[in-house]
Length: 388
Image (cartoon, rainbow, N blue to C red):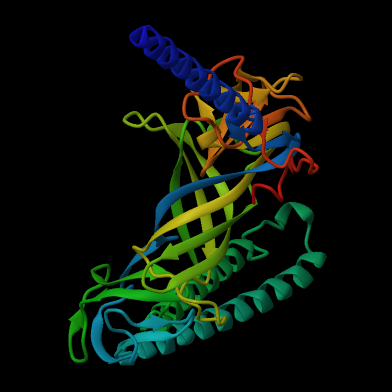
């Protein structure tokens, strides 16, 4: 009997503890607040696209070279008696400077002799002209049939005139030879080499020096195939900026003067020529740019209209990620008309006010819903200020 009572009491105790535990758990569960839903959409930043007009900048490289090179030679033979202090390798001389002189005594004598021949021929002509005048007066009293050209001394007069012209031509040549004993610079020049010195005998026509024209310099530079469609229609007189990026950056201005008019067989590129005035700065304070310097040439090409300037990092396989009206990502194919620096210029596939995804999720997919960073702030259009 007692055993039955004990078992019944134990069972009641267990039931009471269980009910109490359940009530306690329920009470504690009711005290906890419900968990908030977590937004798992990836966050992205966006910008609006805006069409612009853009002046294409074409860049190339080339080597500065002289506009012309002249091999100097003496036009007369003789002994060198002096030369210009700057008439040395690397020297700079100006147009008209006397480079060297040749002993001129024999050429002075030749001029004096030629002048005497001219005087003698003039005297002969005067004498023949007087005789012809006498014959003309006498012919008035003679029958016309008796008056001939020989009687009027016309042949003698023509001969005297021809002799005077011959003497004058010899005088002209003698003066030219005398003048050629002084050899001057044909233009502002850099002396490349000199093979003559005081006391040396030089022969007519033998090269004695080589000089480069420094009144102008030229740069021949190639135009790549992707740049060719953007060249101006009239390339002549297009302004260009020439930059030397050595230890000291040098910037000069020049003009594109011509197209070489042929396509290089090896590279299939066309070549243009730009000229720089006074490269060695004899007439200005501009920085010198020496022959042989490798430089960069920049100039404006055509203006492309209604294009979008987009960072290359946003383009993958010629597609760009946009947001549609439901804030879902969509990959849009685009046509890149030009690549310049870190940017692409797109003429098809984008429209004004399209929302471009600037920061992509780790694994972007079409139809992916995203959360826009700063959604409450106005969007900034992609323009020249957004992409300098």
